[in-house]
Picture (cartoon, rainbow, N blue to C red):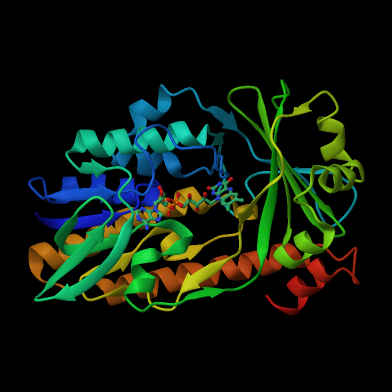
Length: 358
Ligand SMILES: Cc1cc2nc3c(=O)[nH]c(=O)nc-3n(C[C@H](O)[C@H](O)[C@H](O)COP(=O)(O)OP(=O)(O)OC[C@H]3O[C@@H](n4cnc5c(N)ncnc54)[C@H](O)[C@@H]3O)c2cc1C
């Protein structure tokens, strides 16, 4: 089988790229290969969709399905950050307007269904094993079969599996990770962020009477504080203020689970016949709530690079890389500015690292 475009990874970036490619090249042979199964994804963090997603979902033709999915509208974030006084703000890093709190597995499934309806093939349980470029084609070894593709979009998320195989390096800016616990909770509040000495608390409610609660700090501090144990995680929670209060009537339904959440970018975001999109190209701090929107946008941009290459023999990857690097620089500056608002714990390693290294 020789594809026009093989998309490795079927998260928001991969699905957006596939839909957009089928719009740009209606007869194109486009396939997504995802490591996961065909059922809805297992739970994973990342449930706030920032304002601005409506227009891109409309352009991809997914808006009616999204509207009928019944996700919760979200007006912003309540923060205890920089002072003990809580304040309401709209989305921290983004434009005005409402966002949404998603059932993330259902959202991913919805996007992949749209990609399938648009005419992309979707292959599940098909992790990429290896790749080689020869005679103007990518030869891909997938666990299920081998295939050839004229162009590859790496949408494998923060592992950037294909790009790393092609020689790119993942450059991490920090060691942030989240220790997540899900609670059963009828509370329907918006997102709450609470800064404390060792990091910050994140909590929000999502469809299905579930509260998602995470303590965000650096991986070495997680180890030092043994936050992977329920006892230590609960002890830390007991020292928080509004986070603890909103969970008074809630019951934990999972053990603490750790997810990497560091900011990183690739040393090289494109090469001959390939481009990286979404988290594969760069990851954002969850504080920004921008990851999914950025993944949709960059999946769509990556589809333009692929279409330029296939339809016009034009290499627009250099332009793509300049734009992506500009976006990462702007994000990094906003992130540094936001972290520098918190000055209450000068001796805390977590906050000191963020002051000395923007
Ligand atoms: C703790 C945490 C909280 C977050 N909170 C938010 C939030 O509230 N709002 C927000 O907008 N963003 C949030 N994000 C970020 C957001 O989840 C990501 O930015 C977004 O999922 C990126 O989409 P993607 O399609 O690029 O990658 P992913 O969603 O990671 O999808 C990658 C896909 O590639 C597949 N894959 C991986 N390896 C292979 C392989 N070798 N072969 C084939 N397939 C493969 C995976 O199965 C997966 O389906 C958060 C992230 C973290 C870590």
